[in-house]
Image (cartoon, rainbow, N blue to C red; front, side, top):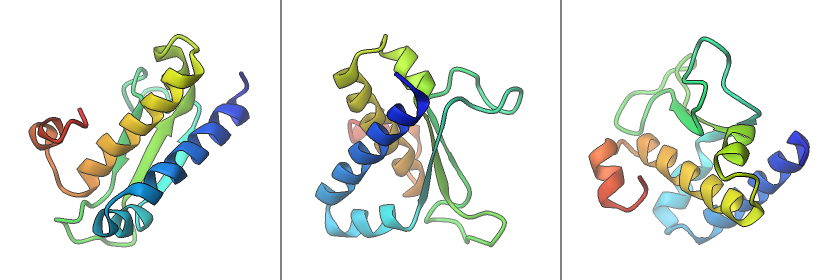
Length: 117
């Protein structure tokens, strides 16, 4: 499957997830930029990462150079799920919700408690 197909599938999956989030969480999710990339930049992140949250969480003061962003690495997810389409969509959703948890200011334990780990 091509990178553009993976990105399109991921965009659609995340749009569907955002629609069913509780109102308050949905409003925050819509304020956090989501980007879709094939893989992490070599040497700057864990090369096996499925996604990452960058910038200021809701608990921090955002500035123009520290805006919140979730990066989803579609080819890493595709490889992680061994090229299974349904597992890919599920993992895109799980990765997005996990990183959204970081944006909301939750640490790893809080994310795990909410079943997003």
